Image (cartoon, rainbow, N blue to C red):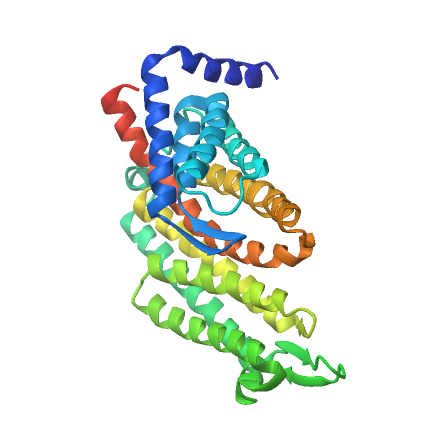
Length: 340
């Protein structure tokens, strides 16, 4: 408790430092620039943007108090210069709350450069490392082969008609694809096709030992598949084969993440911090609180906006995590050189 209070006290003292105040003001201006040029307004209630990263940097450099203030001020400045719809104080509260969260968990914390090669060389021989690489490669191949078998033979989903509730399509992913992309089962057929093509692509990529691109594609397609089934839940019931394939793809993600972490010296402890903080911020601020503000503004139910905002935020989350990790690593080098 005392440590938490000290965190807020130290952050409040940043306002007494002229260099900190000037830097924070520049970051507010940069947030506005990012909001103008690096955001897309899809609908009145849905916007895709990476301007959040400026609030992350502000919280990291100056803590929760400055992050809270700059988050709120940045939202107001953004509205004054580029208003989208009527002003609503709820968005300012959300922006300030996000800044508070970033500052609380990122204040003066940066990823460390982990030299795993030197550590491994002292413990494990080159032959041992080669054996581990072969084991990981074989594990990835096994996961993908089992996934492909499940897609061909295991029950994937059951689709019912909207009018009479009768079963329109049922069976494995392969059988649903063969049934065609018309009628009640077209969305499920698209999902089945995407997952099948994904697994085949990963098998090829695993042979050539590609890591980064297959991992990014797997994350996107897996979440997209889950969300596509969710949005069609009134007529589509996923079977155990679908969930088994998704589970195996998540295991594959973990395997590839560990491989990339070892290869590029990723600080896994800090990466876990980034994942937990952004996941909490996404769920609390963007999805639940943001959806509530939208429902209040436009007078429609919470559930009406929830699905679209959930899809957008969950798909964008992995991108935000990677962006946050590497930007904070870049900021660490700047801080060392400038002595901020």
